[in-house]
Image (tube, helix red, strand yellow):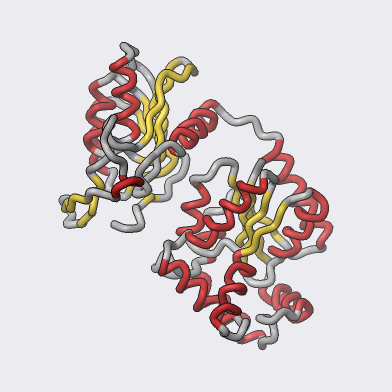
Length: 342
C-alpha cells in the first residue's frame, strides 16, 4: 500500500493525475482543497481563493503546519488502499508526510499561459479570475518564511518525482505510468530497508515531541531496536504530558527539550548492553542527527556508521564528534528537521 501526495502550480494538472490514478489504478482520493472547502462552508465564507488561503493558514496555525494532511493521511491508512492526497502546499506538510511509510510526493508544472487557459475552461468556484489575478494568486503561494503558509517552491523542489504537463493528457499519463513502475516494483536498498524498520519502531514511541525510532545492524542482521519513551515503569509523555527544560546553545538559540524520555538511540544501546550484544563495527539507523549525549554513547559502544533520514538543526556538534572519532554519518535527505514547538 502506498500514499502519493500531489503538489504543483495552479492549474498544472493535479486533478488530471488524480483522475487517472483513481479511475485507472484504483487509488482512493483525499483532497486538501475539499477538506478546507468544508471548513469554509461551515464558517459561512465565500468559496474563493482568498478564503482557501485564509482558512487553510488558520487551521495550520491553530493546530500545526501539517495538521490537515495528517488528518487525511490517517483516513488513507484506515482505508487499506493505495491513496492519493491532493494539494500539498506547505513545508510542514512535506516534512510530516516524509516520515510516513511508503509515501511519495509528485510535483506537476506547466507554462503559466497554458495553465491559465486550463483553469478558465475548468471554471470551478475559484477560477473566475483574470490572468493578472491568476499570476498574483500564484506568486502569493510560491514562497513564505512561515511553515504554516503556502510555499509551493519548497514543495516542488522536495518532490520525489516531477512531471511536465505541457503536452497532452495521454503524455502526462505516460509519465505517471513510468513513475508508478519505479515505485511499485522498487526493491529497497539495505539502507532503505533498515531505515523503514527504524520508522516502524518509532510507532511505539510515547512522546509526541518527536516520535523517533532506531535500529542497530551489523553484517545486514538486525541486532536491537529502540524508540523514544520514559524509563521502564515511569509515566510517559502521552499519559502525563511533557517535562520541558530550557537550554541555550553556543549561538544563543533557545530550545525547550523534553527530559522525561530516553532517546531511541539510548534505548537501543541499553537493550544491547542488557543482552550482552557487542556493537563494535555496527551501523545505527535513526530519524535525524543524534544529540550530543547519544553521539558520545554511539562512539563509546563502537558503532562505526550512523545513517539518518535528515539533519537536526542543532546537530552540528554531534557531527563534529563523529568526525573526530572516525564515525561515518550519512543522511537520506539534506533538509533540516526542527521541532515545531521549539
